Image 1 (cartoon, rainbow, N blue to C red):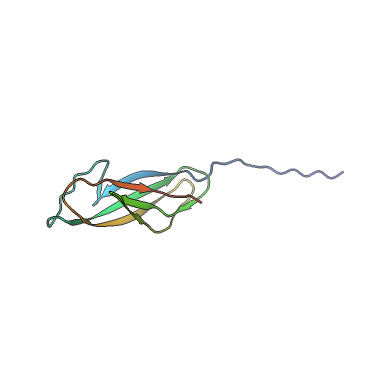
Image 2: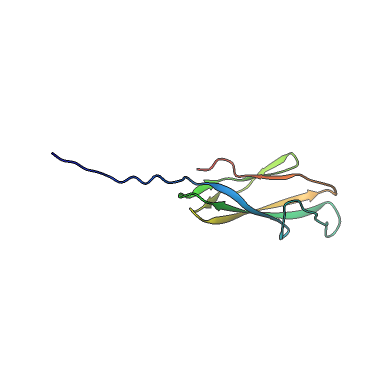
Length: 107
């Protein structure tokens, strides 16, 4: 009789979350940004992604400013690691704007 056993480790898949968002270099939950040379103006949005899973995860994030979505470039976050995405938002007029970031499908 031949018997063979294997060990299987059940692990958590990639679990991607947003660790932080900065706008023009400042941490942001709800931000007031001064147009440096008058409005409309451009801002830089940096998102730090964290992966608390046991496997790496790859995704293509999207930033939506008001109702206009823009797809970013592909991001890979290693297991237990972090990575960043930078989005340039151009031509923001004076007033309040809703900015949302979504990881999209994680593979």
